[in-house]
Length: 214
Image (tube, rainbow, N blue to C red):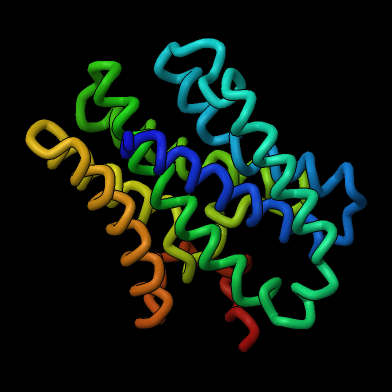
C-alpha cells in the first residue's frame, strides 16, 4: 500500500477528530463541530498546496476523504458525552494533535521536495502543512493560535524538526523519510512536555523604570 496514501488518511482523520474534540469543548453545535473538523483536517494541506502551486488542493478533490472527515465529526458529536466521562477530551486532544502534526509536517516537506524547493522552502511547506489546520481551528474557536504564545508547547518548532529530517533522508529513503519525519515531530513534542522544556519568551520591560510586580 502507498505510504503517502496511508499517512494522508491517518493524518487527516486524526486532525478531524482533534478539531471535533475542540469544538465539543467549546460547546459548538453539530454544524460547528463539522466545520471545525473540516478546517483542522484539510486546512494545513490546502494552504501547503496553494504555496507550491497545486490547485485545486488535493484534499478538496478527494471526496472519500472529505466524507470520512464528516463521518468522524458526526461520531465524535454523537459520543461526546461518553468521551467526557472517559477523560478523552482532556488527555486525547494533545496526543491526536501531535500525531496529526507529525504526519502533515512530513507530508508537507515531501510536497515541497516534489515541487523542487530547497531546504528553507521545504521547511516552510512542512511547517505550514503541519500547523495550518491547528491555527484555523484556534481562530474559528475564538482563540489566539497556540503556536504564537505557548512557550511550553513545541509545535511549529517540532514541525520544522520533522520537515528537516524528511528533507535530509528523502533523496535516498523516501518512504522511511516520511516515517522518520513524523516520528521526529511526535518525539520532540512528547519529549519537550516530559522534560518541561520551554521556548525563550520576550518579557517587556516595565515602563518608567519601575519594577514589575512579583
